[in-house]
Length: 233
Image 1: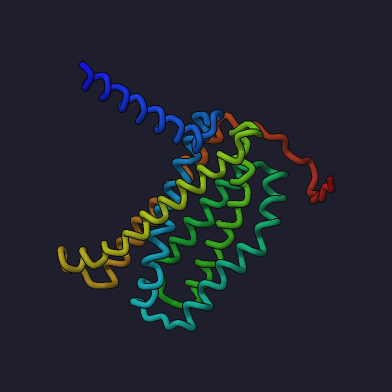
Image 2: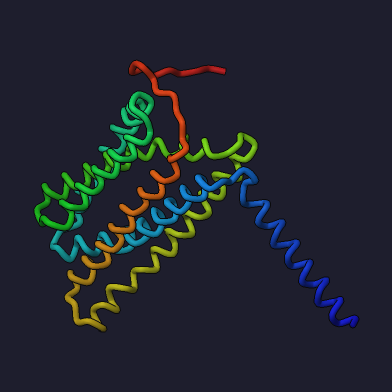
């Protein structure tokens, strides 16, 4: 009897510590829409992790030099930097849902070019479109914060970062998959990289279904004019 009571007490203690851990990480106001959004962030992290571990190898296998890779990647950063502020203004004018759709179209176009051409100028265009699509991600921070009460925002963004970084780390582990495809199915090196990249691309586009689903109850007031205001407190 004493043993059973001790085991029950230990079980209760474990459950209590687990509950406290969950409560310290998960916001109390986390609802269905917030959970759906977080699923999208997990898909984003996984796909970005795969991209970061394989993309350069894929482009090198296509024959691009280090100098070429630098000029290609530059277009992604440049487009994202230049368009982030305009995308935020457009979101205020036309709504976040339309900007999510615009981001999806831009990134789908980018990936279409990415897998169907081999010239450096085509890849520059693909990465410029990718940067434009990523610039639309500026709306995701205010969108995500709208799912929570003000007191829960610290936990909300902590949870978002935890899930995104964890999923990205898991995606990085996909770096071993091309080698397995080489040995198991006798694919060429380029084919192995391409198939894994195509899988990651599908997952990357799939995230938008979660974002749009999370916005089904989202109401917002659109700005009637284009404006940019700085408020000082």
